[in-house]
Image (tube, helix red, strand yellow):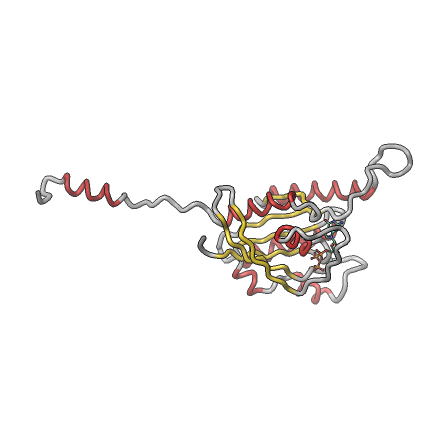
Length: 225
Ligand SMILES: Nc1nc2c(ncn2[C@@H]2O[C@H](COP(=O)(O)OP(=O)(O)OP(=O)(O)O)[C@@H](O)[C@H]2O)c(=O)[nH]1
């Protein structure tokens, strides 16, 4: 196992970033687990890739971003913009990103758009791996409660947001996963995918093999016998 990849986990406050990481690494989160807002935490994990190798990741759990606008958005526009930007030193050093949103809260998806632009602006031509996680925190019953089988408004909102996110991730060439932080199994696929992207197979050398070079030299007519 070689280098350790740095991965930043980000998204709006309260979308389940810490729950995702704690569940993935320790498997100790239940719906009654109370988590407190993160300032910054670092987790180290060794994740198996699709090729069966292991990739060591340093996962940075970041403070939640405020919503872009709306009645619950706190602070001035300038302050919001500053908060929307990830710390520049993290952006420059990072090889991977996990962007988390809750499809039932469309504003948490909108938050990811400027974040991705920031990532692109700061990646300095370096390849970065980005995965987007839709963590559906609340599952609403599939009926409006009026006896018919019409989807509840919250489900319609979540479906519309998921559709938007699908289109966006396709356009931006990112992988989009629907997960549930309460179900550890749902978290494995995105992190195995990320680990695989972060450890591409070693390139085949363009130099001829040493044994082939030796052979061609000894085959030359002027080669010493
Ligand atoms: N039922 C349910 N609750 C969840 C889920 N994900 C997170 N929670 C709960 O929602 C609350 C907030 O989750 P966090 O993981 O702290 O969210 P966060 O995005 O890290 O929040 P910040 O640190 O404030 O940015 C916690 O009490 C979690 O237990 C989920 O998928 N389902």
